[in-house]
Image (cartoon, rainbow, N blue to C red; front, side, top):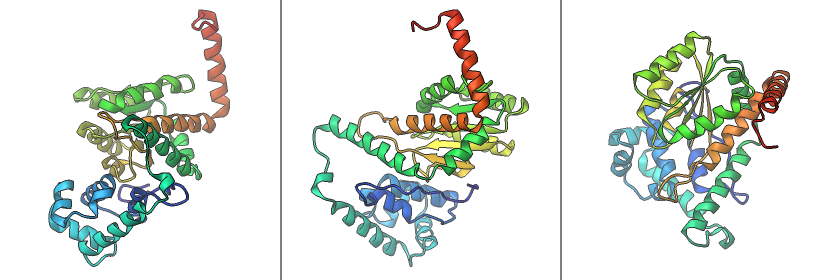
Length: 296
């Protein structure tokens, strides 16, 4: 995906697209400016309520001007925002017309877990066509070293990915600290021969993460991003966007689907260089056995 294109994955729930995913359908194949991406992202994040908000309220939500909302609607092929809002209401009404069996039941904790299960179902549907994950795996497998960016909430996921990736890749570098040190380490990786960067960017999108993606692109690195949505702010700087929804039902977000996607991506890296992967794994097992690292 280039900088100004928008990638959207087909996601289905019980045989019909969920309202959030039908909203994403509105943007499929449309080239959006960074400002329009912010509006699109707000509509996706607030799919249930956006259909009943005015253009001014959408503008406030996305922190853009009201005329930008109007231009956004026209870019999607509507006469203006009222026409787009009518379409959003149709989508919302269709979503409310689901069979009773699809209505969430149970307490708040059960609903949060069920929502995560639904996020995994959506991810599974995306992987019906694995081409983008396969392409991302090839890009990352060939990068020596392989920098992995993850700041704030994404830092544990970046570390988790890197722990296992280091077993099959000779030089994985976790970039989990912001400030001038982040720029230094990114520059050092590029100077050492890195050709690609994996970035994990999750809400609430750290500004430093987006700055680092911008610098990576300027340095000529290919950028693969795992994020929560195809219209995430990080998508603007990515060559390949791999979306996985974040659970937002509890006080703090759940990252089950992004973590699963990270490991799926690691599998694609292994598949891109199977003989190298096998050799590295055998060497690790021999070393671990010699040092008696594990109990079994």
